[in-house]
Length: 297
Ligand code: MN
Image 1 (cartoon, rainbow, N blue to C red):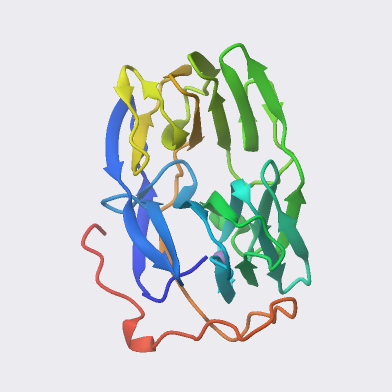
Image 2 (cartoon, rainbow, N blue to C red; image 1 turned 180 degrees about the horizontal axis):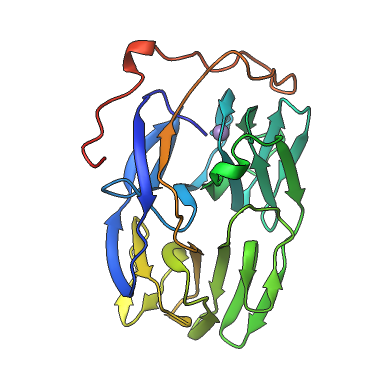
């Protein structure tokens, strides 16, 4: 995904050395016509493990049109990870890969040095859209690597009495995603059953964050708000969530990323074409908007 505003932002891992329970309000942005809650990067330009970007879209229903319609645009230095709770998204890229993403599957695109892609609601759709897109920063040693795209129609999961953990990235409990990543991370969708309590094991060396994706859930007695990202810090070997009506909760985490990254939306000509998309690519921004001073450097 991308947005028209162009800014260079220097980001570093939150990297707490202890347990935390911090709240960061997500902000409303528009992705074309699609309203999105942007939960990462959080205030003070921080990331969680290598996760540097988190967009939450939906749940929404529509009778016509393609609410997600992001024309071809480039990425460098990161992986995009798309996960749906409902609806569908078609990915096309400059490697000529096309994939129809449905709930339960994951799309992982590794930009390496350069890739371009588009993402859109297919014309043949359910009229619903609900999901997230995450970006994981690539460590410097892999930033210039070959681009790649991976579509998994389903991801590993494990079930406890209180719910189900679907692990789209990294390892959680007994589930290990075959999605290829370049740093130690986890990304999972935790389904908490109605009147249930779900405990999942965590790597205490990782920092973690959670976001409520649906239903109702409490964590350490606090009700989770769907427009807030909760940062849990490190040194946790387990997290437990309880729900009355049932819930879906996104869990992201990873070893605190040891590198400061520069986030910058860029649109340059050396990226390939995306012939699968029926239209023009996104226009490049004006160079005058290219960067702004970074007060935290
Ligand atoms: Mn994108």
